[in-house]
Image (cartoon, rainbow, N blue to C red):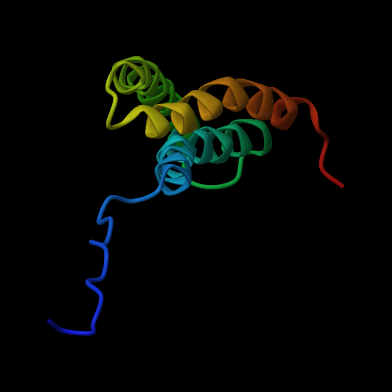
Length: 105
């Protein structure tokens, strides 16, 4: 008999908080694109026509984000990624609205 105790197996699955932050990071993509587009639309900086095209692309990505969020919330393995995406789905319109109403210095 050996005096060494066996070590418990390591859990290789990422934690739920990491999944949540992955969902937040993925959900930031349409938000950042929308904020850049709103800046170009309101203040005329940047490439000509990028504001409209960027906002359309951000809107399409936002709709895709909603669909993916629903799918991930039904999956047991990806549920916390879905929670992160759901957080961004709810926050993004508020942030874009505030960005449209705030005046620059």
